[in-house]
Image (cartoon, rainbow, N blue to C red):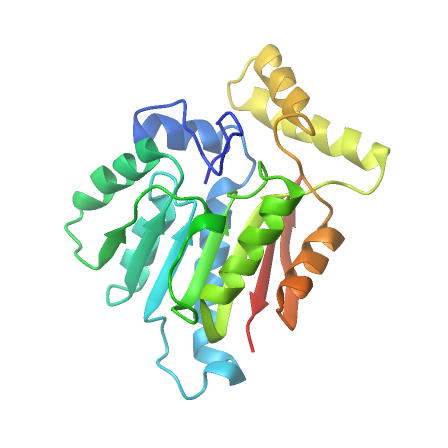
Length: 246
């Protein structure tokens, strides 16, 4: 989860205190906390109702959060699924450290922290996880690395596992891009950012991070091997997608 970094890998934070980083993301990305809430609702719906999981436990056994950031999503996973084994990965050692500090406070032992690796570098065995999540983890990647990261998520999922990703997206028209960027800037200034900060953020679009359209996201997932692929959430410039491995 990496919105305030320099774009050299999945994440590279500039806000050492976890709380300060988390709050800054919330004031930069509209509806950021809903990314996590919708992820948990989707996982619950999938494991309790999906035909693919009818013969399985009603909750995930192993969950990988790639680009885990400060561990905010992991903290919520622990609260919802205290028996689920959670694996956290992030390219930034500072992020992993902040996640450890945050999660050590709640004293849970089912969390495993990985050496700092980007999604495309993770080397778990095939078919290792029931759930893989990547929240704002891949928008700094090149087209080649984004493809590799998505294919690696597919590889690491168990059959009938679910991959959930939230990413910045690209509107399909210049008018759409202009309006969405202005709405984001208005959100940021309404939440205390200066107009200069909002404009600097706007200028990073397409230069430091590289959104693709929702249709391109869906195509990317299908080409990675997923058969069930859906856009399930959209707001401002951000979208949530899920994909099921058969």
